[in-house]
Length: 269
Image (cartoon, rainbow, N blue to C red):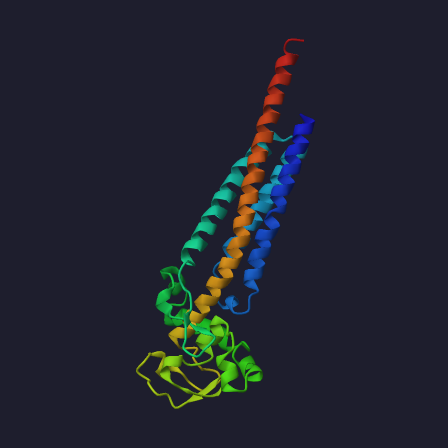
């Protein structure tokens, strides 16, 4: 029984360690410069990671110190955490299936349309109050200003692999026909009726296209890209956690069986 308890405790240590990549993923999401303006995914990830950490500690105590009630709490609690993590993984996958960029003639960078994204993501930037806060956050960064230091010629800029936020927020849509002066200063639009964002563009460096739907779409494209990367880590961790949990269930069952046989033998001696 002692050996079985030690095995269970060691397995629970692995479960506790698997909380580290989950918590780390949440912290990584919170520290992404462009995505820090929309605090959505990082907190559920961190909360689940901390929950797994706490449940793992309970399992370690129950395993090494042979406290059966704590092991039962561990088994139930870890099952709940696995279900929550699995639900989060599926949710992230579903809301990020849409939202790829569109190629533009004679340009390397892509442009993004708000209607391409899932309703959940669009809701994150919908409404004047929400976007006013996000806009203030984006405009306070150096995302667009850094483009002026990097690209001085129009062709160099057109051949640049811009990030979604740079493409959506720092320049007007290509179909408007603006003339390039520098990455954040454009004049003489040819077709202001091509897109509502054509009239929203402003050469004021604190405005630019931060009020454009293309900026909202660019931010969502950046969120989508980051969330999909995070989801890969969560999926791998979820699979490992399920394997550890199943092994722990088997070890706990074997330990209980061993205890029953030991008591049975003692009853006949």
